[in-house]
Structure formats: structure tokens, C-alpha cells
Length: 190
Image (cartoon, rainbow, N blue to C red; front, side, top):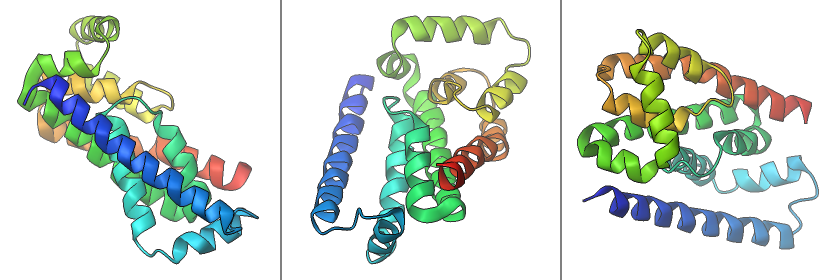
């Protein structure tokens, strides 16, 4: 399976999830569940674990297919499931997607990454990675900070000589802080 096929499959999965989500929200709106965040939250709870699982999958896919910014899912998770549950839902989804992007790059190589990342972005980041002595420290800081191009860096890390264990530790230790910031911001300040 080549990179373009993988990208089409991921795009189709994301499209189906978004259509289902849109249909779900249109149905909820027609039923009057958008009167407040509390009423929508109560409505979502009637679906049990389907809502959180869908958001986990969407968050993982938005990393694998870098089209949607991750903070949108963080906002939805925090507003619909609260700061704590929203944090865990987003953390699990984004971490899973980050690890998937790393391994996809490892298994399928540069051709997949060229298909996932625009060529000008790829050249910019590969030049940056090759020019740094300690890519691990730079990756940790980029993953830690909001609005960094995490998705691209996950793919590029899979191409770099970074061991999987180190990449996993960086994702697990640095990623929660940015997600926590987004979840707290969207749950309490908006």
C-alpha cells in the first residue's frame, strides 16, 4: 500500500466520521439539545462510551491526516465532556495518532511522508532536523508548546534515527501539557 492510498483511506475515514458527527449534531439541534452546553452534555451522556470513542478516533485521525488542527478536537472534548474527561479523551486520541504517524513513517518511508506533508513543508522541516544536534530536545519542546506542527514532526521523527522508545516517552511526557492547557481554556474560560 503506497502513501497516496493510505492518505485516501485516512481521508475517507475522517470524512465518514465527520458526516456522522454532523448528522448527530443536526439531529441533536432539531431535538432542542443545543439550548445550553449542559443540555448537550446530558444528551451526549445518553450514548455512553460512543461519544468519547468517536472523539478519540477523530483526534487520532487528525494527527495521521494533518488537515484539521488538534485544538478543535480539544475544544469539543473540553466543552462536551468537561476539562478532566475531555483531557483524557484528547490525550489518548492525540497520543495514539502521534504514535501511528511515527510508525507509518517508519514502515512506509519517505514516499508516505511526501504524500502526507506538502513538499515545501517537508523540505523546511527535514532541513531543520538535519541541522540540529539534539533533535530529541527540540521535538520535546515543540510537542510541549501549543500550535507547533506536531503532526508533521511525528512523521518526520519516524524518518529520523530517533528510537521508538524515546519518541513514545516524548509524546507521553510532553503532549499532556498542551492538551491540558487547551482543555482548561475551553472548559472554563469560554
